[in-house]
Amino acid sequence: MATYLIRRLLLMIPTVLGITLMVFLIVALAPGGIGAGLAVQGGQMSDTSKVAQMQAYLEDRYGLNDPVVVQYGRWIARVCPVRFGMTSLESPSGERIPVPRELPEPPMQWAFAAPAAFEVTFTPQSGDALVEEFRALQRDAEGRRRTYVGSVRAFKDALADHVRSLGEPWTSRLDPKGGADPQKFRDLPLDSSPTTSPAQTDAATQGMTATWAKVNAAAEQMHLAWSLAEEARQRATIAFKARPFPAAGIEVIRDVVSIDSPDFGVAFSRNRPVWDLIKTALPVTMLINLIAFPIIYLVAVPTGVLASVRRGGAADVASGFFFLLLYSVPVVLAGVFAIGFLANNQYLGWFPVSGLHDSAEATMTFLPYTDESGAWHRGWLLDTLWHLALPVLCLVYGGFAVLSKQTRASMLDNFSADYVRTARAKGVSRKDIVISHVLRNSLLPLITMFVGIFPAMLGGSVVVERIFTIPGMGSLVIEAINLRDRELILANTFMISSVSLLALLMADILYALCDPRVAYE
Image (cartoon, rainbow, N blue to C red):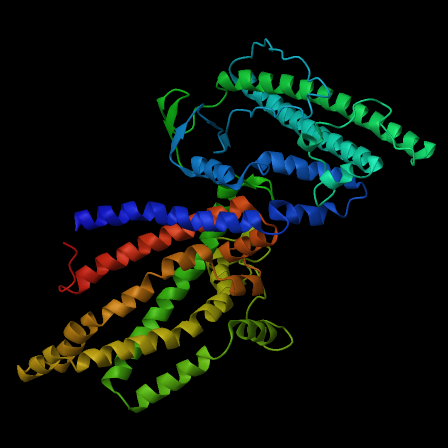
């Protein structure tokens, strides 16, 4: 068994890598890419250049200009528990703070000489003052980097405008979106009066001269922004090396090799660490599923056993008809009816419409109580269960038919087995035959269905959570997909795939425990 477990655990690594790589490629190669959601929001701005600069900053922040394989390798390096290079720091809130990134060099240096390299000399403070100083330097470095990246985008836009003023054959080198890659214009005329053909008018020449002047001005602004950003980066790096916060994880060799928990990055759609968002949404989804799934099993399994024991009887026909009737009702329709009739004050109004708690939850006690005036108050616990009643109802009713029918079919298959006839011939009681023999040997299909619970706890029920406005994992994943939030999508994919594989491994172990015929030696 030990050899089998080790082999299965090792095989999980390439499996998870393959799943995450496939999702990574789908997100990276989708139309619009990771910045599609930002482009829609930014399109509402009056200044479209700000939108372009914001997109450029986003591409720089996530390394979207690098090849897809390089981007995936960078993400794997963050998720991998073994880290190489300078060790990240961990703030008191649990945030991982990496060393400030190197700045990309200014483009088109063959035409516009880059600023001279320099080295900043800076002595950081110590103690609590170092923390405040590092935070300020970190914000300044990130802000100036953002300004520099925006100035690079402005330079490329100015270059594209100049190329368009030149006409053919230069405009054929622009990319499909009208952008200018400086590497494609190494032979571009570099004087203020570009070469013109006899057919071009003086007005066209003046226009080209004006656009070239804008290119020069944009290059000067870009170089100034690079100098300021590089100075701020070096200062922040010096303060970082002074260790204002303790090192994250366990350092094996300082600033060379360390071991740390997976870092899922920052969700660009909310500008918050992905793990913080998951920690907020995951308990909600797990709470709903931990209530719903036991109800399904406690109702469906005994009903399936009873239906198999009394095959063709009233209990078998009635339960089969009723569960099949419930299964045929779509969850969306059931949720709408539940809100429209059970929660609507115009009809029954028994339950709340949405959410997990009342607006006055902060002032509630945990358990129900009666105040001095004799008024009864639900308390936090009953209020939570009251809000969860309808979502749980919509989750459980569809599972009754599947699990009950599976239990019944598996039980009937084992009732006709030879060992059951032998047990009956030996005079074993009917109760022992059903419980100790038939039910135990019928557990294998139920175990297979049982392990599907754990991925569902992480993925959440998208339909139910959206209908009842529950901030769980299902809503979080849908929002991430709509906004093309790669970091959040990959974190959920990684967690769900890992838990799914571990659940399948647990199913194999339960098979061996329930059926002595199953062995993995």
